[in-house]
Image (tube, rainbow, N blue to C red):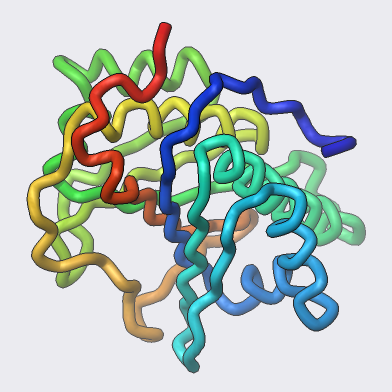
Length: 216
């Protein structure tokens, strides 16, 4: 993966499924040229990348595979969006480059592990990766899940997702009664000056009893 940071290998073989919620322009960015871009991402990462169909302004992109394949696919997508931000600034008078911003969706029962006692875990994630991380207090509309917003450089947020993945299996979720599927068109707000991605990170069934995701 030239011109991209090399993600360190931890010798992981467990499977993960990440679900990203994107708007049409973002989906178009990773499809491009009759699907050639997403096809290349699949081949180079070794992960399965599926994009939901439908007329909704939000689409679900599901990425499934071994951990290293997942991280590589995610890194490639994040780099693509960063390139889009750079391109959008070519004729702009704005001098500072906005960060890539992600919104991950977790079962509410898992957010305690992510925050840690007294906020210790989320503080560790921020300091270790350099990314900004915020956990929403309220559940997402019509769901039992909460949003976790991450922003920063592509490398920072990629490493942040890697760190978060190491926390998830240690706190298996309770049964999710209502999974978040996106807001109706009238409620969608993508913000300004940055690329926002809504991402659902969900461990595959094989991870439910996995208690040592990353070994020291």
